[in-house]
Length: 145
Image (cartoon, rainbow, N blue to C red; front, side, top):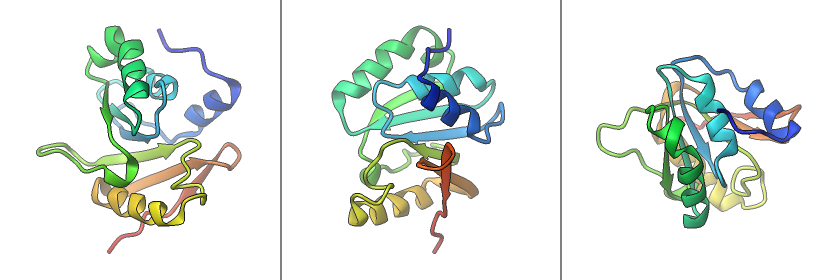
């Protein structure tokens, strides 16, 4: 069963350009409510939810374990955005989103540059990056070398 979302999070999830087969990366997932809602919209796709907090990842894993994770539509990993790297044989992502992540909303510019480099290395050439702060989302360019 998809999680109950606040109106703001529901608007963000529904504004993402998801396809049933999308590979999605959420940076700063917290307890995983948005990631679980995205997973509910995927059929052959997958969402990886990351957060720097071990507590948040434990909460997200516990909430998603019986449905989203066992179905293969979702996984969680403890990692800060600025440290994220694909694992061997991990496919790149098509869509990246972050809600209230200081490195991407301008509060921490140096971390932001590092996160953008990590996103560029972990995504397809056509990937898109979205953050909150728009109506309801704002798209940021992914810098390509």
